[in-house]
Image (cartoon, rainbow, N blue to C red; front, side):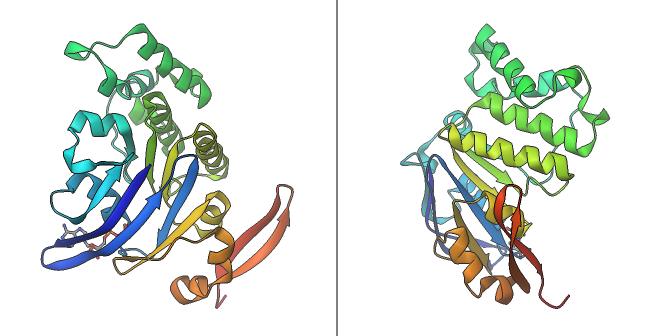
Length: 254
Ligand code: ADP
């Protein structure tokens, strides 16, 4: 579980987060949406800069600022918006996920190597395990980072706009990945750009506007509120698909 309690943050004299409270429980997908520049990434990153904020961030009930880097790294996985492109093999990247659990001198156990191999298999990367990261497509690279997160096994997983460079099959894989994490009891926090994907995946939605966060909403409450039109200039439609009812958003003026 991760909880942001009355978090405020100033950078360069500008108030970027204004008294933000957000609670993401375990076994649940919490989605944060908001226009560019509304403070979503800064909120996620405030976990790591808890000395610069007022208010506090709690991880599984413990104040983040009292946790060591290693403790924090074990408890929380964070996937940034812009992924690095290290010149290493997929298998090596995925094994890096086990580093916070490694023994002295960074040695990985047999169990660590097995966890990494399992994650590679689960994300459908077995045939690419020996490929070097820079040779992969954007979607494959993202998949390799998902595998690393899976291998890491942290209770809380923060994903900052994970679907931005994904094609349709990889977005479906992301949805499957997120639901599998939830079924496994993890706390998943997603910053998402696409409103339709966001409400399809979310248990709880928060909307950020100019550094402030809304109260928590269910996807239905969000879709039935004035926020899609007022904040995102979008109309909401309900459609019926082979997977049941879904909300779809379209620019209101198109
Ligand atoms: P979002 O993730 O919602 O797009 P961000 O959290 O990246 O928004 O940014 C929120 C606001 O904070 C933006 O207006 C951005 O320009 C500003 N900002 C981010 N980092 C800094 C910084 N180091 N100094 C000053 N302003 C910053």
